[in-house]
Length: 210
Image (cartoon, rainbow, N blue to C red; front, side):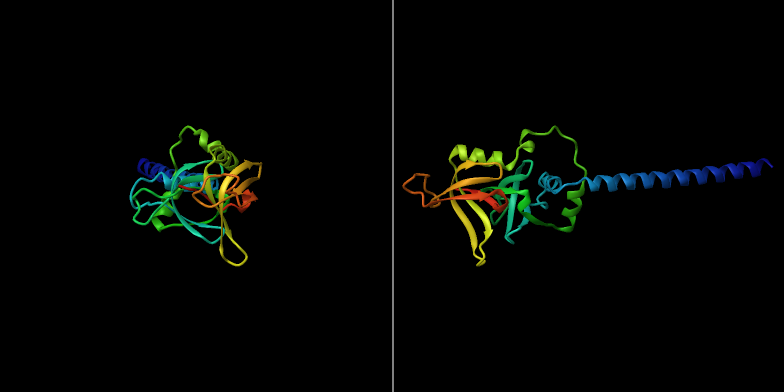
């Protein structure tokens, strides 16, 4: 009888361990589903940009205009990223500086291994001030600096690239005023060829001149 009880208890312990193990596995799977459900495009791009190995490379983005741009992201704001357009022969430095609204990103081109890296849980870190700054603040800073810029507005109805060269005169809540002039020239009234109000939603990318 004693042997039968021992066998019964062994069976009960084994069954309980299996049930607890299955419950833990289900709990972990549910926690992972919840974590993935909270991921944002910004978070996944930031995770990829934190990779330091050469295999990661810069971000390859497709914009809503259909244009493709390869960028080495350096800073992420609330709704934008800033970095350098990666030149041929990356990781050599020297690419043009740019600001890309996250709303202009239509897709991210990835290798299979990069997909997995973009999903990795990132260690918690104190939020930087830049992470709370919106696109309007960045454009106001460029306005204050009187920086010459090129605004990529996507494609014209004819299919030609729609690029605006100039200097930002002022920035509203959802638009900016651009004084148009030749690239590489200062913003002088005598050199301004026109003025344009540009809605933020039309901006695919801003490149800094010079």
